[in-house]
Length: 271
Image 1 (cartoon, rainbow, N blue to C red):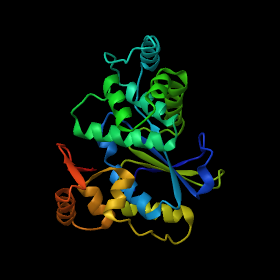
Image 2 (cartoon, helix red, strand yellow; image 1 turned 90 degrees about the horizontal axis):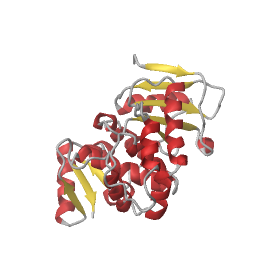
Image 3 (cartoon, rainbow, N blue to C red; image 1 turned 180 degrees about the vertical axis):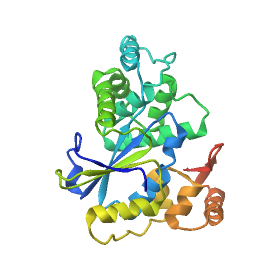
Image 4 (cartoon, one colour; image 1 turned 60 degrees about the vertical axis):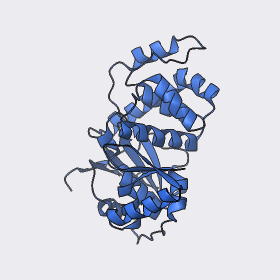
């Protein structure tokens, strides 16, 4: 594995980092669908080994005009819904604004944003699209609009960019594994690899035999993630994609899931 390096210092660990023995930093660029290629493996890791690790997503979009965009956003009147504002910084700041309503709210927003990027029907850099995503995620819209304008959300994104630089992450997606001993080096894996590679790294970091959890029922899986691809279902249950497709079509006929139109992949959503 050529793109594996050690990270000598852990940057800004979360307050809940070590309730589980491993913390996983996932570096993504929200504006590039290729950065979401690793999402299938991340979800499979969560299903099988989520009792061993926590995840912290780091938004690593490279932007030279962050301050200009923030000034434009902060200069809007209080009642403005920003429908005419578009900038590559806005999706990242919107994620941080959603996270201010709690980790689960931030995760819902991130997943829905991913869905919009993959479907490629609307411009996720447009503030009206981000408002739509927030409404889909059942966020408090008054709070979201306030946080979206706030310096707190902008600083949170800037902090992610600092973490990216300090860990010398030059490629997305990248993963960095840390164990519970803060003095130990982290392990940085640049690029995307197969599930068994990350499984092996987890085992090495724990220095123990991994015990996998059984996957939930398909219905419970959709309650957890709401939107899944055929490939994700196939990999989580370790079945051929044709069989996964057949099972998903059965649920569609039972009106339990709906198929979303998407050119890049086959997406399904809970109804």
